[in-house]
Image (cartoon, rainbow, N blue to C red; front, side):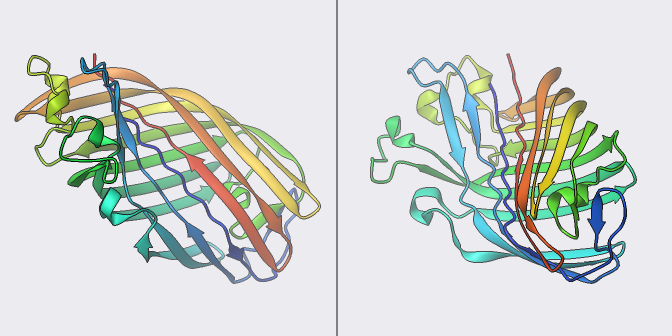
Length: 303
C-alpha cells in the first residue's frame, strides 16, 4: 500500500523598493523596506495502491483547495507575511466537498545554510470516481465525499550549499536577485512527520475491503522520517530574466504505522525522496515578478 502526498505552491507577484547592492553575484535589498504580495495555492492529494480482487489497483483522494493571497514585508533580518484564503474553492463543493486548510511556513538563511519549517493541515477529501464501485453514486456525482478525512504534514528541512555565493532568498526573489550564473552542490537534511486519518473509518470503501487482509481496512497512516538528499543547484540571469532550479535525489529512514479496527501496527523502513524546486521571473531595481513551484512527494509502503 502506498500513500502519496503531493504539494504544489505557485508565487506569482512580488514588489519591492530600491535598495543598495552588495558585491559578488547577488543584488540584495535588505537595507530597504521591501513590500511584497503573492498569489498561490497548495494541493495535497494522495492515493492508496493495492491489487484489489475487483480489478481496481488505485484509489485517489482529492482535496478542494483555495487560492491564497499573501501580503508581507521584509527589512534587514525581519520578514513577515500573512496569507488569506479566497472565499471560493477551486473545485465544485458538490463534487469534492469543502476542505478546511491551515498552512504555516517560516524560513531562515545564514551564510551557506538555509532552514525551512512547514506545517500543513487539511480536513475534507473526496474519493475520485467512486461511482465505479459504489451503486449510490453516478457519473453525474462520481465522487464519494469524506468530510472527516484529513492529512497532516510537519517538515523541518536544513540545506547546506557548497558555493557561498548561493543564497536561497535570492532564488525565490523575495528581496534580492542574482546578477550572474551560480552553480552549487547541495545537501538537504529532511525531518518529516506526516500522515492521513479518517476518524476510525476505513479509507478503503467496503466493496473493496478484504476481511482477511487488515491493510484494506486501514483508517490511519502515519510516519516519522529522517534522511539526506544530495542535490545540485543552478541559477542564471540573462538581462532582467532569472531562472533557477534545485534537483536532488536521496532517501529517508521511516518509523511508520497504520491503524485498523482499533489495532495499531508499526514498522521500520526505507523510502526514496526527491527534491525539486523551480523558479523564474523578471526583476529590476524597482520590482520583482517571480513564479515558483515546489514538488514534495512522500510515500509509505506496507507489504
